[in-house]
Length: 120
Image (tube, rainbow, N blue to C red; front, top):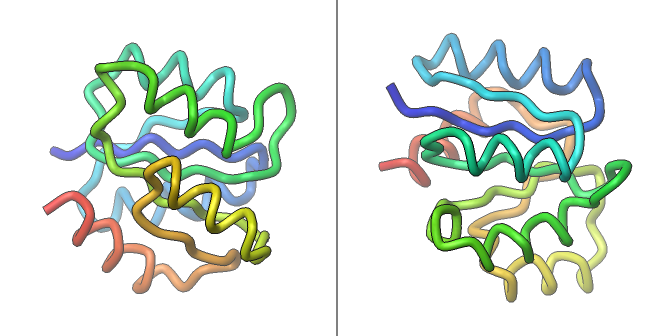
């Protein structure tokens, strides 16, 4: 079973996205912010990271930069899942290695399609 790390400070978003992922056959590991996300990424064998941008303690873009510095997580695909749509943020994420950018709220079928492609 492929395991997805879901990093978002909204408990509601984590519940909704986790439910969709589990129903599609994925395992889910959750984190409430970037600091917790980095810890989970180092502890678990992760196939994909779903990452929010605006979070306390460590935002998603800074977490993405740190993920790319760690040999264990450097090659794990990252899909940004956020309410942000600023071109400068999208550019920064792409330059840091994000494989995609989805605006919340996202339709479960679109999310699962993207997750399936990125974990294939």
